[in-house]
Image (tube, rainbow, N blue to C red; front, side, top):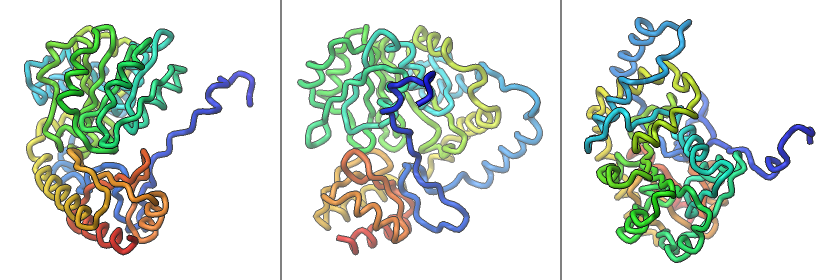
Length: 349
């Protein structure tokens, strides 16, 4: 190992993104919780005109992103102002910034696993201790365990609904979050808000230590553009802005996100279709006596007892899914993709 490299990074695994489809790969890509339908052609044409006529490639982006912040505040509602919004190059960048302002050199971060892996990966990259508490069999948080593990914790990360398992926070879990002291940064990741139609944004005014994370990558179909945002108390946002890298969002991503906010109703018209497909897929898994779990996201989580084998064999049949958290996470795709996946899954079982 080169002597100038941090020795603690040896044990840190590189995050592996899912396989990307190339032009010759006809697989159903249901492994990254993306929306299977691409952006509509009219949206792409409008964006192309903006790129051609509005963007000067030799100029840096507008690093304040004020128009986008105001559009997001209007979209979120509940009296949220532009001063309560911070923009990130994907939610991952904001997660890293939240760790910088709350835990670096002073505290630990707590997560309940299985959950989104980047919380732990980013914390470890900053040499921040991660307190990992296992979930119960139904994937609810073990409240007794987390209360016993809070000593020295300065940030808690929870997903609503959880990824990969799909369950929303229960009333008991919400009561626990509300009871956390104000010296604990409480991050509620609502990446799948548009699919679950459940949000805690209405309570932000009552909890200055809360941060809600959202993304343009899922329901709004801008995964290629990498735009995420945080909504929080203005003092939290001010701290995030202090550690945010300058010009962190490329101009084309900024324009795409702004266009999405101007047309969000049209972009979200397919949400009800995804919700129906999700329920149908879950019910079909029940008929097969699969250990599948109800989901409020755009995915279904199940366990078969031979998950790694099932994932590889499905990949060989033309369906890519994710093996994570001791189970299989299957993105809800188009009706045709879902039918093919179920037929292939049934043939393996």
